[in-house]
Image 1 (cartoon, rainbow over the protein chains, first blue to last red):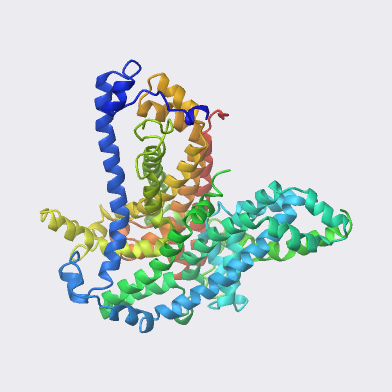
Image 2: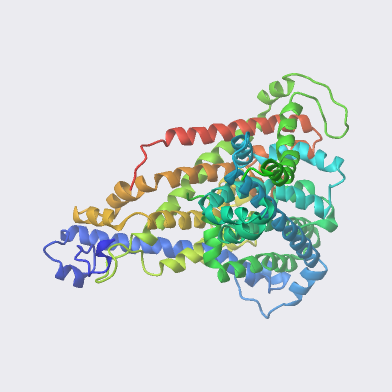
Length: 307
Length: 308
């Protein structure tokens, strides 16, 4: 990283003015031209992908403001006027409001539970030596690579027998259990990086293990908790497979399954504009939150994959 | 630090471990056990039937189709996704023109904007993405075909999800669309940690961009690519392919089972057909495929670790 400050006397791959200065060290002209073509091509591909990402999203937003007739007759035309009634119809009649509320309840409960229980387990596994420590750690980690669907068949009956099927708190408990592997994996690594001296000092001063954890270690682990919290929030907010299997009561549906259900039933009712409004309604809060907390979201989602 | 240590350990581990054991570990063990029974899931009675379910599996054409498709998902989807992501990440971080006075290596102009936009699909639920594309693929009123009509390609109006030969590719494209951005950002972070002098040395030796990519960037990023491959493959075998196939294709499972995947087949057998035991058998097969896939990628991808 030594040369970043000084003007770099690097051979320019393209750009006439630069290569004139660096002419002696510059690459042969043929390569220069090749570089320029490659540049246009690769930049073009980047632009095309950006368009491919944004277009479907914009199309959905636009469609949510159109009436049913023009959705079918001219999918790409702008709405004749902004049909806000689609949105209110989706929120009330199509129960998007209820689904939204259910999702907030489930994700709120399971996010808090995941962070509290995950950090407790991770702290003990990271900081204390006891027989079975490694075994329990790998038991948690193993859960990341197994196909969840395999467990869901018996899980349905386990949950049913406990009387937790189609309940919000039942769903919360299952969400927590399936979020623990990654959370424990991530936070164990994080607690290991924290200095031990402060906790030891607190302990010498007579604080109990429990108090040391809640008053000293947890505040120190805040950056890690935020990262893994964002990761779990998005994962739980967007969860589809677990509620599809375990939450079949129409009144208890969460956003994702509510929307899919709506799509199936709207096939008969024909309220496509309302459905698109619901779709955008589910999309926008997460996208807005992402744009505002962009840096933290990216750090949270990629944190686990990079060592 | 000995005082009350074990009481504390037990106290802190009991609830998380108990919850995890009850809702994750126990069902896994149960499902392997159930695969040797004739349990329907509708009534509590069942009896052991040995390997009958596994024998039935071997003769089940739909199972073989779903296995084929799942393997295709696990191989092709990560290949395309990671390939695209590597290319984009390289362009965004290293591929820029050298600007006078600027850093030696830099991305193309506007790279941070691209990174933000590419990441959009990653924050959306795969279920919502699948719904959105189910509309976009609609042959009559969907966004794609009407775009084709608008540019004068009236003759090219595929049925997309309705065409047994196309449906699977359409579904896979949606997973690629939604995950490329994640890996662009992930690889960008990895590329940022590669020391600049390595690129300088390569440039001084007259290496072009392609050479730089294959000789410097890719080898140094290999660990991340490999774990990304495993991660992506597990997703493509499991939750992601379940959502897209179940939501997007008719049946679900596509015309003539052309898009059915193992994870969907497990779900249908257990919760639609009342054959819970047979469903767990397919699930065990899925477990075997997943573990074999992860082991294979780790083995094939093993290289000497490069320190830098």
